[in-house]
Image (cartoon, rainbow, N blue to C red; front, side, top):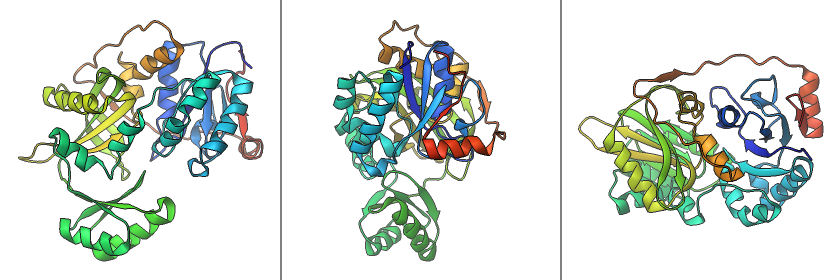
Length: 355
């Protein structure tokens, strides 16, 4: 067990489909230079396990895939906690959040704190529930249908009209323009995520993101709004610019107030010509670009870290309008022996190991 506070962070991969964990780690280091950061990984090929830098954990451990269930996760976290003395955990992947919410009380009893939405809020933001939530609070949303079999998938796609998005319950989205493409996309999504399949109307327009932290009582502790300038085929923002948009600010306020959201969030909107801002996603974690606002004074992971560690907040600045980011990817060089060791032992010391 280490003699300094430790926070565990998951989602360490950076690439075409980057995960938020590395950006969260870099942001936490700006506020807490002496904090011990423990990486949690599902795959020994996650890029954040190799090389060194401010966006790397001090040590990393493999943990069971979310589908294995809460018991296996709790046992693994208990083992890591015995070695690291975890004060808190910040899960950064959609597919694992439900498990951490289910384990909230067990982890609290061990002394591991988290900042997560309630079961009700988490369920309400699900892709399958989002359309109904938006209708309830008066916010535009793409027409969405939930299909439980191949027949209803086809029926709903024809009802909405091609092209449509087909999405997994937790993750994965494919744009399809015909029944043939629909069948192939559904087969792949069901293979990985199972049923149901979400069929959703395509809204064409500019994309906007709001990253923020909810205080659990209906308020927003801090937020940053960007317009995406470049996105990958997975929808990840690879370039964006900070904007001032009171209309989007008000929509975010209504959503977070209605859900009484606790912890990190990302709201994704589209704006088509002559159409209102349309909410098409609420993600229950930070986006992969969260280190960008941290670099310009709006350090939202630090706000979460302060609350989890019980330290006085230094507050957060508003993101300056006109500041922008462009994602830069590069190769991480390492030794195969490190990969082999991570694969077999399930852990790897990344930093100096001092503590």
